Length: 303
Ligand code: ING
Image (cartoon, rainbow, N blue to C red; front, side, top):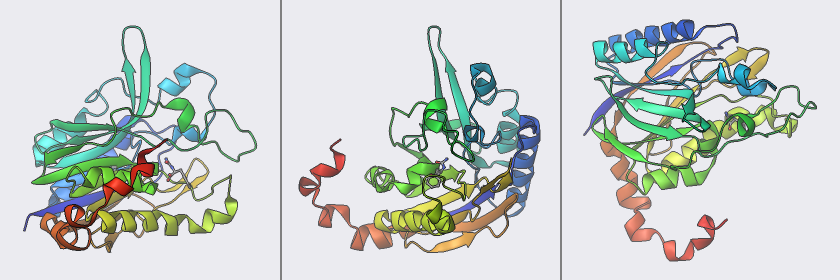
C-alpha cells in the first residue's frame, strides 16, 4: 500500500480588507497543525489569498488586478513555500494568476501543486468557468468569473508526486464528469480541488437548499466512477455578506466520504489515503480497458 496522509485545510471567510499576509498567516498556521498530525500534503481552497472578488462588478481593471498575483512565489506567498520546505509538506494552492506578457495580459483562475521541497510540480488553469461576463444587477451578488478570467487552454494534466499520480481541478470543474474521466484516463489516483460555492444560486434559488447535496453528489460519483481519491476544500462561511458552503471533504475511490469539515471556519481535516485502493475500482467495476466502449462515446467530446 502507498499511504499518503492528506490534509484538507478549509478556510473561513476572507474579508475584502484582509491582507494577503493575514490570509497566508492563517494558512501557515494550518500547515503547522498539519505537520503535528503527520500530514504530507495540504490542500487549500480556490482563490485562497483573497476574498472571492467575482461576487462584485468592478469597472476599473486596476481594482480587479489588485486581487491577482503577478508572480508565485512572490512576496505574499513566499512564506507558504518557506514553510513547505521547513516542514517537508507539499501543498495545493488556488489563486488568481495574472500573466503580464510584453504585449498582452492573461488572467486565469489557477492552482499550483508544490512539493515538500517547496518546488512547483504543476500548474492548472480552471477549465469550466461558471457564472456570467456582464454586470447583472438583478442578482443579489454577481458571479463574474467569465468576465475576470480566461478559461484555461491546457486542459487536464497529471503529475507524478507524493508517491502517486496527481491531478488538479478547481470548483465548478468538479460538477462536470469530464473532469474526473480526463484525469483518470491519464492515470490520476488523486484529484485535488478548492471551491468557493455560494449557498444562494440567483438563477435557480429553489436549489439553494441542495448546494450541499449537489457538492458531494458530483464528487462522490466522480471518485467512484473513476476510482480516484478526491480532496475538496472550501472557502467557507459568511464572506462579505455571502454564505459560502463548507463541508470540505476527503472522498475514497469507493465514493465514501472518509473525512469532512464540521465548521465554517479555518479547519484541518486529515485522512491517510492508501493510493493502492484505487485498484479495487480500476481493476474491476471500472476497468477501462476491459469494459469501456470509446468507439460509441464520440458524442461526449463533440461541441
Ligand atoms: N463556484 C460555484 C461552483 O461551481 C456555482 C458556482 C455555485 C455553480 C452554485 C452552481 C451552483 O461551485 C465556483 N467558483 O465555481
